[in-house]
Amino acid sequence: MHAKEKSFSSSAITDWKNLLSLARYHESLSQHRGSLIAGEDFLRVEKDKGDSVARMISSSHKKVAADNRYGLMKIFEVILLCERQNIPIRGHVEERSNFIAILHEIARSDNKFSSCKVLLNIKD
Image (cartoon, rainbow, N blue to C red):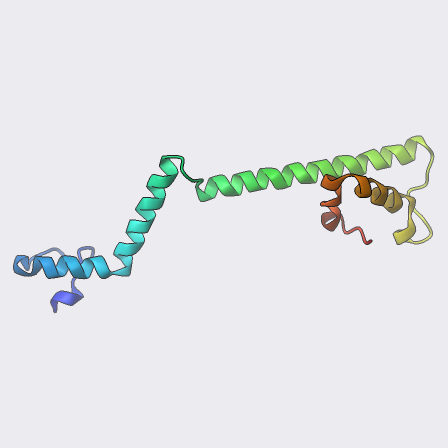
């Protein structure tokens, strides 16, 4: 087996005379570089200089859930408004229903709700 085929992770060091060349070779391995990057990322996260992937996913999920909750509350408000005012929700065609028209009006003045339009599949 050649010195270049050995790595610290797959076999024990027995050739102490060539330790320096083995160490240099080990440093060039992608596994070594990947471990260094992972270690640096771990230390950065531990020092709160960055967010872990789990934290980023969790905060992103919380934002999506909050946005969806806001959109659903607006939809419930429109349904309750129609109920209180005896306004039929349906129209002759879905695109021209009272429900969709009221949602469009709310979206024109509420930027947060208008960003939910894609999720609600409301056609302009």
